[in-house]
Every structure is written in C-alpha cells, then in structure tokens.
Amino acid sequence: MTVLNTIIRTCERKSDLVNKVNTNLALGIIAFMGTPILMKFFFSLETIFTVSRFALLPSLIIPFILQFGVYKMAIGQAQALYYGYAISIGAALSPLLLTLPLTQLGVASLATIGLFGLAIYLSKTMEIGDSDIKILGVGVVILLAVSLLNLFLNLTLLELLICVGGITLCVGLSAYEISNLNKINVSTNTDTNALAVLVSLSLFSKIINIFIYIIRFMRILDNNRNR
Image (cartoon, rainbow, N blue to C red; front, side, top):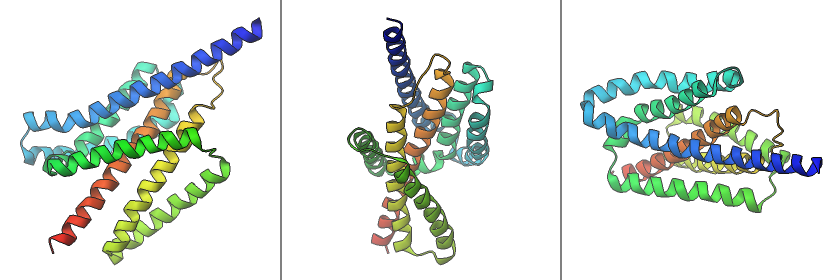
C-alpha cells in the first residue's frame, strides 16, 4: 500500500509540474506579446527604440541568474524574474513587432504555434535519446559558426539556410525537453516550482527563437522580391 501511495504521489507531482510549466509558458507569452502593445500606448516610437536597447541587458542576464540560483531563491522571486525576462524580450523586440506588417506578424505567430505543436507531437511519437541530443548539440555549434561566418559573407542563401537550420534545431530541442519532462522522476524532495521555472524558461526561449527565425526568413524573402 505504501508503494502504491508513493506511485500515486509521484504521478500527482509530475502532473503538477507539467501544469505549472504550461501555466508559466502561457503567461510568459502573454507578457511577451502584451509588452509592445502597452509600450505603444504610453511611449513614442523614438522612446520605444531607446527602451528596447536597455531591455537587452536584463534579457541576457536573467537566464543566467535563474539557471544558477533558482533553487536558492523563493518561488515568488524566481517567477518574477521569469516574467521579467518575458517582458524584457518583448520590450527588446518592440521596434520590430510594432513596425512589422500585421499579415507577417500573424503568419509568424501561427507558424510558431504550428511548429511548437510539431515539437509536442514529436515528443510523444518519437524516442529521443542521448545520441539525438548530441546531434542537436553539434547542430547548434555549426549554426553558430555559420552565423558568425555569414556576418562577413552576407550571403542571402546562407541566411535563409541559417533560419531553416535554427527553426529545425529549436523544434528538435523543444521536442527533447518536452519528452524529458514526461520522464523526470519527481520525488517528494524535488522542488517542482523551481524546476517548472527552469523548464518554462528554456521552452519559452526556444519558442521566441522559432518566432524570430520565421520573421527573419520572411523579411529576407520580401527584400529579394522588392529588389
């Protein structure tokens, strides 16, 4: 009976973890999308451009703070930092999001939802092992190297390939993390609140990267048509 109770409690805690991740993700995306809208109401476009530059700093620092200190801080502090990260990303990208045509913004949003849905589907239908994550890791290193190289070459075709590669890697890594989330052994000693914040932060970052890569891809195609 004790074993059965332990299994039940473990399942409940795992379900609780998944629910917390889903909630954090949903609220993080709302904070991200809502930030440019609120900034448009209160600030001029010139001020928004200035704020976006300052917003880059917390968007770079907060992930490191959470990664190394989330288990040492109160859950309220961790969640506040996570939502602060979502808001800072929204503020940093406000000039882009507010000047982007609504059709492109809508297409990019729908495509991002579809691709993240694909990641969820892959996590449930494919066995993603350590060998796969090693391949994805190598892919990330290659993507970074090619991206740095293209800063000097400035080749349109290579830029398109970088976008496609970035999207593919983000989908694959998201699928791995979602699959891994369902396999985590959530014991009674596991801090599900802190773990949920870390998983949410990682998945949120990948969703935003997919979104940005799609926008970059569409803008490159548009620029080529207008030449």
